[in-house]
Length: 155
Ligand code: 4NP
Image 1 (cartoon, rainbow, N blue to C red):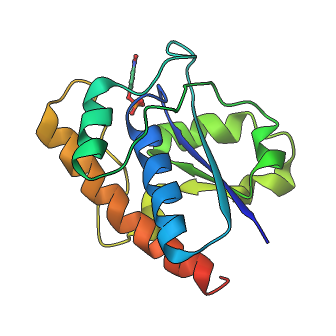
Image 2: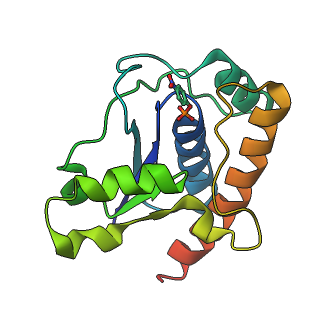
């Protein structure tokens, strides 16, 4: 059965497209049936490709994300996706505010819940430099590995 995963941050041009790139890349490695999308809690960057710094960081790790385009979260995402993974608490709060039904809210959680030994929020690299994007990549890589293991074992 397909697992539909939405990755969510604020602008949908740095963290969540990086997370989406990692999840779709690693799902192939793991042979898991996963579809992905990503979205932001604000619409300032709607229609834009990921930030060049995010694209460069991902390319350095052999993963292309240049095809992705930003959009804002919508209430229907709670029905269209099985898991809505937020990069930080503020993004999670933004998601929960638009949940169309109380029984769907448990679909939304923090991405870093899958890497409990790391900080629970992925820091926003927007005002940072290459090292900040690299740190984001490694945090997301760890969380993605555990997410893949969790899905593979059907939990
Ligand atoms: P992201 O980073 O949430 O990781 O995509 C940001 C990108 C843009 C803005 C904020 C965060 N912004 O305010 O424009």
